[in-house]
Image (tube, rainbow, N blue to C red):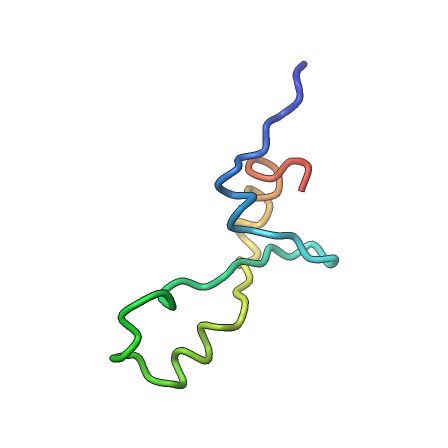
Length: 66
């Protein structure tokens, strides 16, 4: 059976932590920032973590060698 291919789009968006969590960068911090509050922009700078439900699918199907 051939090797599974890593989905490159997922590899660019997600990274795995040492504990097995899936980390990603939050959206909405690229442009049109004037109407967003400082508190909202500050919270968007922090990394997001995928909920426990879809983590298994991301690890198995999108990032098999992750």
